[in-house]
Length: 435
Image (cartoon, rainbow, N blue to C red):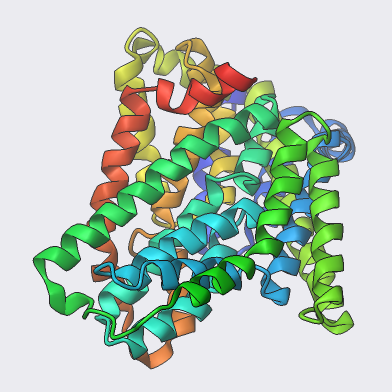
């Protein structure tokens, strides 16, 4: 067999192995190892298994990953972002769909400390959905708005997906973070527009709040947000101001979050240890997947499969619009079945050379890719965010109702995606101005 045939065989074997229930990390490593063994022999395969993991893990930027994960876990367990939702809830009490809008704003604030779509959905869902159901909101709107609001967590910095993309694509993480801000804010505005329009057309979705809010209550709610505001100022201000590297920013934020949690007694020692354990578990899983993806990239390079695929699609190099359409369709399909980080790490060894050949901006593409992956988080049949919210609401809303509630937000997501693709300056404005 030729090297290209072995590489293509590995790409065919991989989804079969995944469908058999093998975890994504071991599946990537096993298939890549077998491919290298079949092509170059036992010695080369063992050599790659020794060298590739070290090269991947030894990257300095990768050390920022556990720091930001720890920051998010501590904020979640200490409830340091509860004040963001409460502030939006009280200040938007008179607005139709105010609680749903508050969920979007609360998720945007939490995203600035979390970086995870699933954690964002789970945290905001536990706070917001019970209050919306109590206020007689339709379950579709209540659960759907929180499920989609969680996707903002992957766009607003610090984003775990953008950190990993920057590592693989060799793009400065700070540039990606700056580019993600405008995309995240545009997504938030889009979701708010959907809520406003839907509640105007059908007031039964969100009955007017019978809530009288005094100025004193609004000021008190504003004061409750100081932990979140302080952490955002420390992490994002220090990062973009050049005071911290990404790793130092994550570490400083995690340390500050722990100190605030202990000082306010909202975080116990047991919860802190659990946050560290969750961080270690998630980090190990992500690193294992990253190693597998790096081995797959090595196989595709040595076998010539990557070059073969690129040559096969060379006709698209001179038609960036056609290439982007093909990429969008690819990720919309894969995102419906695969977890975003796994999907990204599996496909980037194939997609990045095509993007580079077509002359597309890598910072811009990283943000567009992240938006595509997050659309997959709310797309049936899998839609991981939907099942996270289902775990929060229990019997209050069936899974089918949550998917129906997401439909209109999904249309807005596609509109935002089209804007990001056809008006790249939306993404590149901040990196060019501040980078």
